[in-house]
Amino acid sequence: MNRTDLQMIYPDAEHHSYPSTDQAYLSVPDSDGYLWITKNSLSEKEIALLTFFTVEASPLELSEEHLWYQILFHQKQIEEKGRFRIIQIMLQTSKNFLVDAWKEHIEGIFSNTVDFFFLTPQLAILVEKHAKHSLNKDELEGIFLTLDDDFETVSRVFVGGFHDSSEALAVLFEEEQAIFKEEGKQIKRKTVFGIADVALHYFTKDALAKSSLTRSMKNAWRIDDEMREIIQALWTNQGNLSSTAKELFMHRNTLQYRLEKFQENTGMQLKNTDDLILCYLLLNH
Image (cartoon, rainbow, N blue to C red):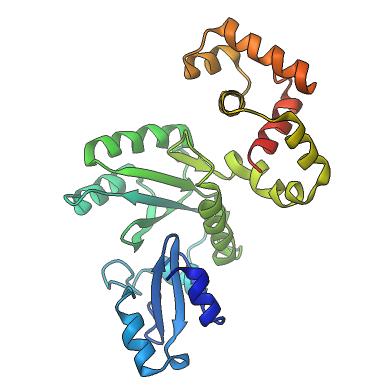
């Protein structure tokens, strides 16, 4: 039974990316999170049946003692002043995953960590205070690729923005969670990404989906798989033809020919940034 089926049966159930620590709820896992169902809305038989599928929050992974768990999920007031960012780390691990050694490496890398805990067995939350030499996304990309090699893991990392402690950090984090969940499916070539990498797509997708004009353009152009790959690679390489050709294992002259043919068919010159942005957005909607 999937989430849609359960929500039809229990319309008041809530979907979250983490299991509940509240004993008043059952947390039923699905492909991208957990469905919270209140126990007082269930019969004894329903509770017994759903218990086979539920996940109890592990005290080690979801300890209420973590200050930033309280801040992010229970709106506890922040006493420490400063700017903080939340880094979400989604992990695919092997059976022999050395979680304590992995955590030790992470804590050694982020010297300004103020809290670090697992939200689920696959999702770690790291809260970092801003410092002069905070690591950027390119530096983190290399670090996590190395960690993946060393620990036989596959990481997807969303680096949140630095936000002042005076702001509603729980609200901001909730939106960053939604962005990570949605846009992590779109980002294929990066282990580490942030809001700047996906903002254009995330904040325009609803408007584009409603546009008859863009839908007509997309249908008329009939972008094939090869051209899709070219547009995606051009976008990733910021329109640089040499880097794009190298990534695609394609001769630069061949790439140039493909772009010229595409321009003949569509009028779009992909060496032009505005044209490339439009094609990229159409490609991903």
